[in-house]
Image 1 (cartoon, one colour):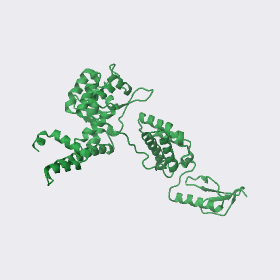
Image 2: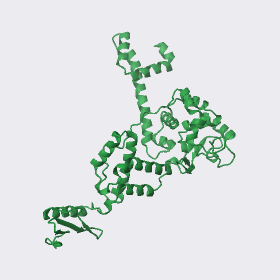
Image 3: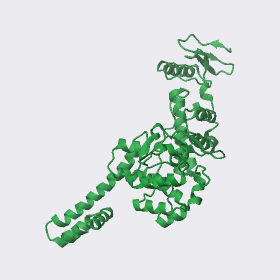
Image 4: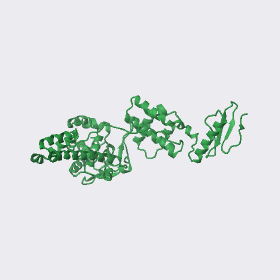
Length: 412
């Protein structure tokens, strides 16, 4: 008989339905009655399900099954719109990733039904469809962040299903690093003088595009000894440029300008910047703030970078160059973080690691020089043996040392 109780239980209720199957239900910590998501073939199976639920409540791992029915797309859209302190460009990026890569595949799935095999297959399908590893990693990280909130803050699901090892890691191509001479050469090849200092400051002060275009006259020291990053421009499609706070709290910083380019900065202010304290330092001919899309054609960027010998150089590589050069000065991680405007030491450690690698290669080259002189058994034979024992990178280090120390090489 429908509704008939099958004995009294310490937790929950089981009843036999007219179909002969059994339904289980219980009163949750929220005071509401919750039925099992499915019926059971036997009363014993229903009892086991109730024991599992009771155990989850005792461990404080219970989640409201009704809330877990929300679609991933609906939850993710709310997550993006309600996330505090997201910059406009980040909101735009997250919305684009959700619409292009996540929603078409997983958008209609209820949060409670997501699991790791489903996430793994989704990522594999993206890669098979030709999506780059970089884009797949960005989409995965967004999904992981959304579901982390659903797990830890909203407690809609018990466990984040984004547990695919390495799925959030990117392996971008190594970006070029200019020499100091190349930076000055590139700056001199800009189509208009107003963009020369723009290149120098971007490289030697390691400023982001939005930070350098957002500089005002009041953000530059009277003697050109520092620039202050107080805000940055953000570009959104179909909208005007938006000036707002820097990318992070650490982005609000004062950066010392190298002595040898201070005169260039002051000359630029004198010739190309209006007199008001809030006047933009770098502008187009009409005094309007610079846009990314206008920079390349206005400055002859492609022609200039090709002439310098780095035809695929991006503007952001100037910041990369500056960070690399700064790391070579043996600066501490903390000092590098401050100059780069990073909250996390991760990026600074990457540049320091690159410098350490160069230092080790140089030491290996020195080992080669020592081996030529100190290994017993015949000088010429030892030189040949020592040279053959070196890697190509070590041999190049030796060549560089020979060029740098001609007098020493002549005496040896």
